[in-house]
Length: 386
Image (cartoon, rainbow, N blue to C red; front, side):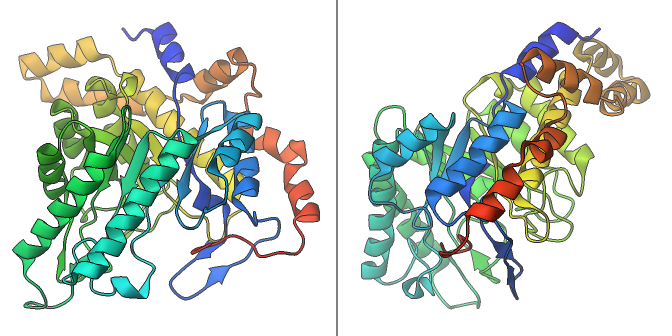
């Protein structure tokens, strides 16, 4: 039998980090769509993020993206976050929006460009020191479009050299989280294309280097939960970038395309001890046509629902069925948990946490949406690249 009290206690401790860029304007490769009331500054992004945490109770930290969220005083920004009831989370680097990085950044064939990229990563560690952030999140758009364009092995050597320099700069309690993506924008060879490449570099670097799994960064049919289980087993799963996709890296609301996959992933997290460890659960998604804050609240709720179902798997019954080779019963135990309507359970959890049981409705009644539309007039709205 599943211990409901234990499941509820675990859900109350859950934390899902939201990304600053999700609160800004975004769009497709063809058009960025503006919305009224969108933040104009990192401070206003934090104000919106605080609303998500206020209504869900489980979104206490906010990822920053540099230079999109660059400010003069990061200590003051961290203080503003705390005043709003949230904290600054991972610092995300950007080595993909500069003309110098056309042929790569940290893997570029030219030493001066590599130096510039590494300098930016070291700057991000300085920002971590100022904000109290523990995680440096790295994703590289580096790769090649044509056979022969560059030496594949040499690019791996450059990658290892740059990562080692940044790793050596990390302080106590700080981590490097390396993300992978199997294609785009490089179409022939990507320098960090899969979890194996990321794992190999992190393993060589040491215990402060861990792998980030972005749920949209895999080829169709990839068994992401197997990757999660393996990285947890090796102690190398640093975090998630949660989103959802129908074709490629769509960055849609997590759980939108395949909620069953999200459940399977979260079951491996629970089963592997990742739910009670320092694995970082982060959203990495954009909201192009839907309202920003309600979409982020819904995304957090989707993660909560998948987690609740994962916690309800009768692990004793599952282990017995697996040991006896009862294929149908083992699958039935998993499906029983997935098919459970956990919304009443989560309403109870929120009520016991002193929250409104219905976060979306509570946000809509709060008047925040109308307030920011009325007040955020003039200036330049935040968006991709700002």
